[in-house]
Image 1 (spheres, rainbow, N blue to C red):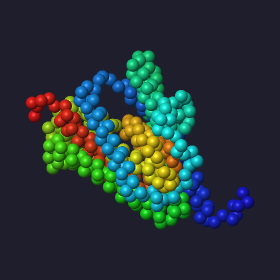
Image 2: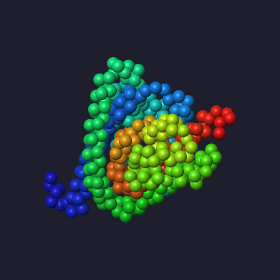
Image 3: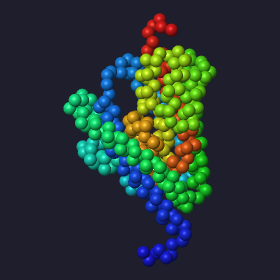
Image 4: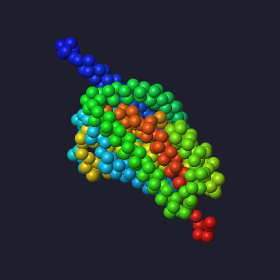
Length: 377
């Protein structure tokens, strides 16, 4: 109290900005557990039928591609190291002493309440996934639970929309705190992060072009039939909004509607390589900014966590930040990096979403090639 009269204007601005930034981050963290519970349990509990050979091939392909996307995100961050130009205080809960074995054991929660209170995303996703599959097996008995999850999901999506509308305030506050602490170097770090992110996204585009060449699909013809979907993705930054045009373009390219109807909607949740790249980069940016060295075991656990957590949350506004808000504390990384990343996300999203759509259009071509019978085509 007695120190207040001696505070400078910068001190007052910094203190106020810190409060606003922290409140915004707390709001983001508060929605995660109920949102994931409702989404995962409802989605798995209401799943019907068997995906068959085509669906299984698609899932395997999605896992390979998203794994490659995570590696691209890591490589870009290791090369550019943009977080080193930003200074963020490290948290006091870093778990650097944990081994890979203990981390894998801890991924299965002994108490879901404890996991939810800590926003531990990997234990939550495993528990919610098992509950969802159990509800699917006992669908009649679980009808009330699934109806509750549907209602909860609608409410939490509305809540998420409100929180995201407050994002500009949290973003400005976080940038203010960072500039007061780091000055011009912070701006340089964010600029370097944008360059690194775009490099990784264009690297993923190059991978998709190589895949097209590998399955002998003309790149020119492919782009002509997908350009409308890509333009919609770029202008709306929504993969779902581009889906109708993507389906139409791929059908004109000669793919069967039945195959497209299975593979491409699945890809909206399982094949968002552009978003997956950004998740890995967001985690590593926080580690670099806090000067935290991640060992191999932690990197493996981050990889596994993001592989699981990225599934099924495509419909959430700014889903990457919802996932990161849970992932960062799990590994003792500071949440203060989130509003900074949000400040430049709009620029990156103009490329990230088209990459998601591009990958979703390549997928049915690959699946068709892998599942065609001898003598076809």
